[in-house]
Image (tube, rainbow, N blue to C red; front, side):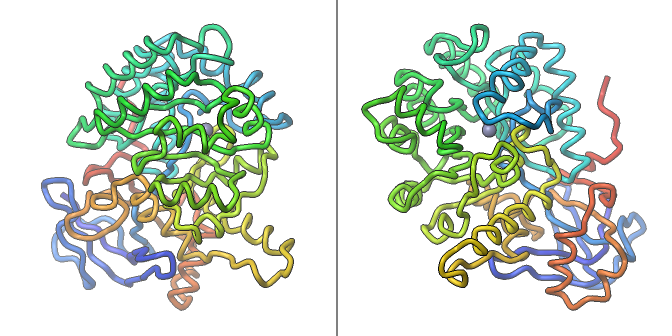
Length: 426
Ligand SMILES: [Zn+2]
């Protein structure tokens, strides 16, 4: 087991991010951090050294595996983009061999960008979802994952009867939930209310509760989505109301986007303990809207960040975090009165990338922090050298804004080096 040496970044809260110069991080044989101290390393097998920083691995709490190779296709609003880009991309996953290959590309890309945990949607196809899980297991990756569910308002080939969708999900959950020493978890994954019948939504809630799995879905992503939810489920006011009625607002649920939530809905989401995943790059890319992160946080909602690939084009999570700060600044400069709208700072961005996201995923006791007993998910990076000359809190800011994927030298998950540069098994 190597010993890591470098400047240690430790997000402590939304307001505090500690920096420890010359820290030593030791791994235990069980894949957890065994010791974290300041000083010089003693042994020979040392990674890092001068100019290196040790960071917790990044957590991306909302993205779509089948859309990995469809990033950056601009010029469409959400429903048009679903028809022309997303659905054809998912239909390819009828071929399990292609699903396996693209899952390797997905994992390689995420590791290259320092992401050590994801919550991701798969395709609707059970065999391909199983093959993707096998790749995630082989590659030593950490993921919440599940086959996407829809039984209406989707193209033929993607839609399936609710009974079949639920039974296949149940089988996959039985096989993969908490597999690989807990690194893999299953998420029942209804796409969004307008694509799901009441039977499919209620069934997802019941099975996720019975098996203690996650639920992941989309909420209030755009005004068109909210309108479509109302048309499909006319007895409910909006999509939050649909999820509440169907039993899907739970502490194990991850709601992607949430651009269109009023204060009453924010309180409802917060009181249910449901987590919300802020996807600022996708919200702008698809011109859906500017999500009011500060209002969500102030209401007490547990929050994480998502690249939202491929509604989002950016997979390097620090840039997604910067987009969250920039979105809050954009809301502030247009707020009346202007000063009334607080803006989160870089410490909060680091928190959201790591420990805060772990809390939102219900994984706060195991990941997101470099301290003894936590899973050894971390990065060794080599940022621009001038950052070392700054006071600590300026370092926290400059590192967030200037770090690049090419500066990542090592990525560890559960104490095992997984990249960058480790070839995929053939
Ligand atoms: Zn999504």
